[in-house]
Image (cartoon, rainbow, N blue to C red; front, side, top):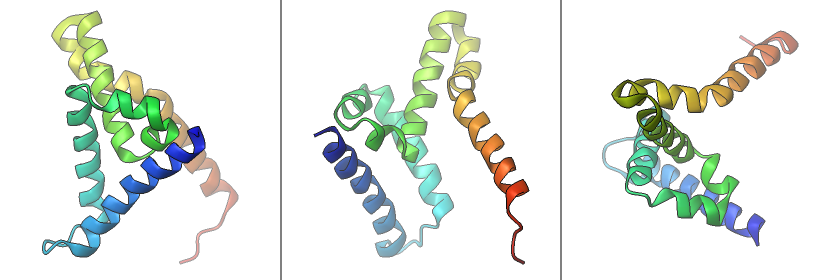
Length: 118
C-alpha cells in the first residue's frame, strides 16, 4: 500500500501543477509552479498538516516541491528551538543541505559525463 499512496499523492501533486500551467488565465510557468509549491508546502507544514501526508504517502509527499517547502519549514522551526530567532535563518538551509549538495554534485558529474547539444 505504501507504493500505491506514494503514486497517488505524488501524482496528484504533479497533476495540480500541470493544471495550473494549462488551465489558468494567468499562464503559470514552471518557475511559478516551483515557487507556489515550495511556499504552499511550507505553509501547510506550518499548520501541521503536511506531516500526516508524509506518513501516508512517504516519498510521494517528500520528493515533490511541496516536500522541499515542508523540509525548509521544519528546519526553520527546529533551528528556532535550538538557536533562538537566528535559527529561523539557518535551520532551513541546514535541514536541506544534504539534498542541495547531492543535486549540485550529481549535476556536476552529469555535466562531466555528457556533452550538451547546442
